[in-house]
Image (cartoon, rainbow, N blue to C red; front, side, top):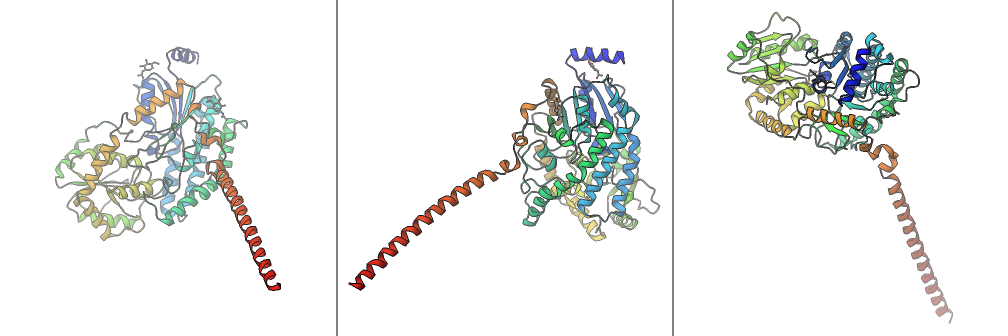
Length: 517
Ligand SMILES: *[C@@H]1O[C@H](CO)[C@@H](O)[C@H](O)[C@H]1NC(C)=O
Ligand SMILES: *[C@@H]1O[C@H](CO)[C@@H](O)[C@H](O)[C@H]1NC(C)=O
């Protein structure tokens, strides 16, 4: 411990900081976006400690200390399995269930020995907290209270409107519908009504449902004097969102929000395993890569659907590479099944024709920057939204796993492969998205060190956070104007009526006078 403290002193002299990174979600696709940031910050001499289910485990990163919480992964797998096989719940119930189970996950992780030690060790000190910041899930921000340091929130997806609101970024339910709603660019009237209801009724309802549960978890692990999570949330210095204006909503952003999208998590090309390389090189007619990602596993699909998919694949003149966790006895000879595949390098192979994906942002990112057109089969979370974008932008098509049938499946595959417009579009958009002054990771590192230099970013705080909602919606201004208008109108009408009455009376009397005379 003494050596550690000494080290801290030496480091703080050299402008290096102690940074704590907390990514609670037990999911590869959530964690992978943070890895390059941890790596980069530690290489720049900062002492980085992370709480993660997917540690980098690179002994060369001597300044990175990882608390491995992968024990929780099994629970997550069960949760997803249940969702796909048995869920008859509606969108909101399912989402709320997901968030509730996340609180349980957080509770277990905070209960884990090494994490507990970190919380209770009075000699540990951090200059900055970086957390994965999910909607209605601010539990990890309690570390900022514990270590009395500024905090940065970061997402593996685009921010939801609930999160944009927390940093005082303007939101608009028709122009920028929530990233968990499956809406693209131009919303129909009914979509705009739903989007409005989601933002103004459903989200506040969910937040209300979850706050108490989370506050309990926070109180249990950080003590009863921990401030309300909402106060911690509006105290974050910056927000890093994994989006860009080409593939996500083109929206106004306050200075405290930084877009770090654009394939930040991608790694440099590596050679494929020899046997796979051989198979893909031989597939001169092209190959299809099919993977439903790390959370939704292909083997969770119904057996009938799996049979139908195999039948269609068997009729295609292409090799098919399917990420599938179980053995299949009756598979056609052109179908290759594997538990694990080096996805990025498979997508980089020149013979690839099509990627069939669940529409996870990271998978889509990897395909986009390798210019591979896609078919999206979304399951939950941000997947429906991502797939909608893919269809709207014209670099792929969508299929529904609940109604998937043979003819449509085959026709969709052939359309995306044979019509060159999908590939041309994706190439053009990928080039646009990457034409930026700095990469996403460079931006994230620069702004992280900015927050360290200034011990927070209070000066960037959005004024929206400090005014009541009716002022933002101009209710008071509109009210005053309406009031003045009605008073003026009233006065005008009153005057006119009085005048008219007088004139009438005068006319009446004059005619009476005439009669009587
Ligand atoms: C570790 O941090 C020190 C400074 O604190 C830095 O000089 C060194 O390059 C870093 N090494 C690695 C491998 O990250
Ligand atoms: C907000 O953050 C600052 C440090 O940046 C801290 O001093 C302050 O106590 C925090 N407020 C709350 C309510 O957590």
